Image 1 (cartoon, rainbow, N blue to C red):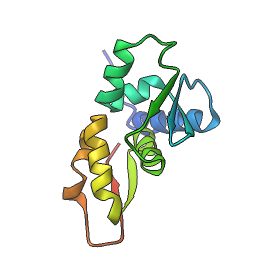
Image 2 (tube, helix red, strand yellow):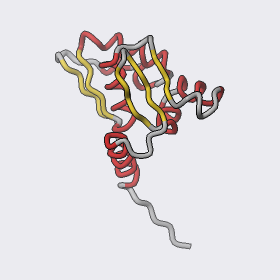
Image 3 (tube, rainbow, N blue to C red):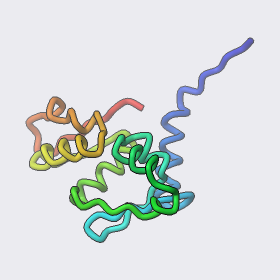
Image 4 (cartoon, helix red, strand yellow):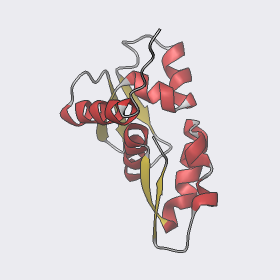
Amino acid sequence: LLRYIDYDHKATFLKMLNQQRMEGEHCDVVVVVENIEFRAHRCVLAACSNYFKKLFKKQSDEDNSIVELDFIRSDIFEEVLNYMYTAKISVRKRDVNLMMSSGQILGIRFLDKLCSQVTQTHTVTVNMPI
């Protein structure tokens, strides 16, 4: 039995999903935050966020085609969504606490623990290995 491992698969997989999202391909949900629409893949949101996982489990697919969030700013959600698809996030220092609380509400463990990652710079960029 021969076994092979494609070490680039995870990075390529995320890159292709993000490209599909940016082009609106195969997106099956629209998240509306402050009247701004974000197209996404339900499976990506559910895999990254306990909030979305629970939401999608308890509702039918038709009920979940549009999800409105009123507890997060649109610019913060945009960064959260980018993180879900790229494993990278940029946060202004003044928004770190808001990002952490958003991570708590959305059930995204990495974002919930951002305070331990903060440095003295004005913009904090945290890259998680893929």
